[in-house]
Image 1: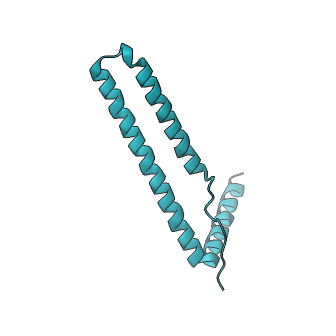
Image 2: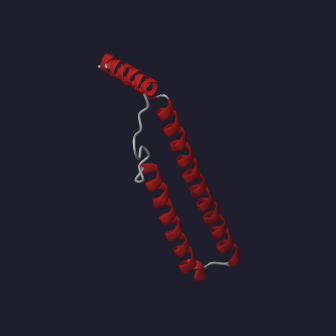
Image 3: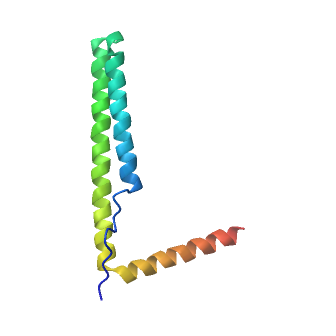
Amino acid sequence: MELYYKDLISEDASLERLVDDLMLVVQGANEFAEAAGANLTQIKRQEIQTHLQRLKDSCRRIKAQAVASAVATDKVLREHPYSSLGIAFACGLLTGTLVTRKR
């Protein structure tokens, strides 16, 4: 018996939203650097541009890793739905036991 869940990976995943928000921050920082660039030396402008490009590349890499991880998780959950459910239940039970024991 196979279970199929439509849209198991949400389009509004919080990690993707975080990366998109980071890209917006980078874009805003880029615009700010261009606006403030009139008061900066050429070396400082190039340094800021280098840092911004590195930040953009990091955001793209994080987004690609998040998508790849989500696809891999989706594949594992589809291949082993009952085992995954059992493991999740056991982890929840263990966590609940440890939390209530400390009180």
